[in-house]
Length: 125
Image 1 (cartoon, rainbow, N blue to C red):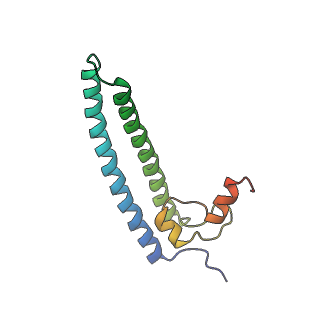
Image 2: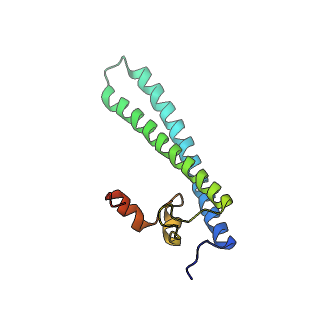
Image 3: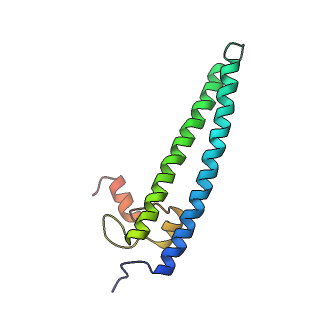
């Protein structure tokens, strides 16, 4: 009979990994906020001077996009923590089978096994 859920010890390991990633992301967001604030100030101060405004604006925009992506990832990690509490963590949304431990350690917010993610990407399901 195939295993249908991870053990409490396994879930604890996943939770620890997720909390570590959340800490890392929170630090990254803080760093990007700090950097983007200083870049925005420099951009505004230099806007009237003869500088490459396009490059500076691009850097500010890139910082905001990075912060947005990190924020989205943070939300997904928090949802993963909720799935651990609900008892649904690590179970593929499509097949109902367990997602591999390796995948969950690399992509802790995964909700689909690699096989079904690829099938969905190719519109096979």
